[in-house]
Length: 145
Image (cartoon, rainbow, N blue to C red; front, side, top):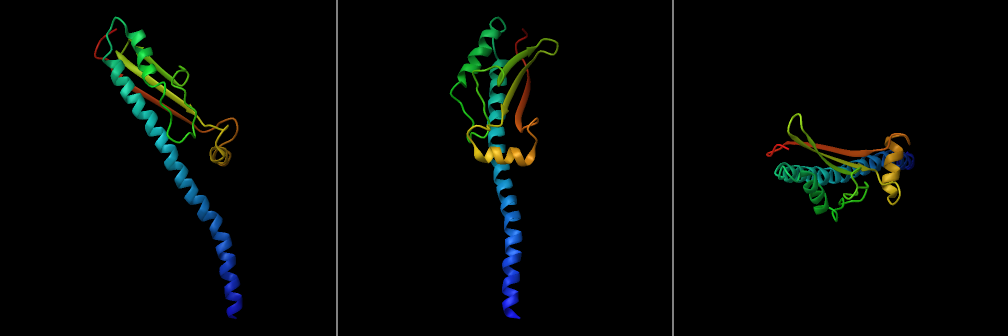
């Protein structure tokens, strides 16, 4: 009877281990994704603050200079693609109706270099709707443009 119980334990372990590993890897990846998100959110906040203090006469040129301050910045884990030089990924604009500065960040999942990102993207979404990070930060402008 004892020999059968040992076999039962091995079968239970073999059934539970993949689920446990999937749960642990999911938690780890969620933490990594959150780290990239927090990096984008902090850049958006500091950019919005700098843009809100910009001189009213030269705000368009100032927005480009603010973006240039982050041209060497990258996301800490590389699961997402973000290029601060491209306005598609990092855009600062002014809303004249409400006197707000709006900073928009966009970072699509990096399916080229990261195997983990490919696996997570495959498990969590379809090919037409991949995981992307989007951050929009709005701040009242101190100088009306």
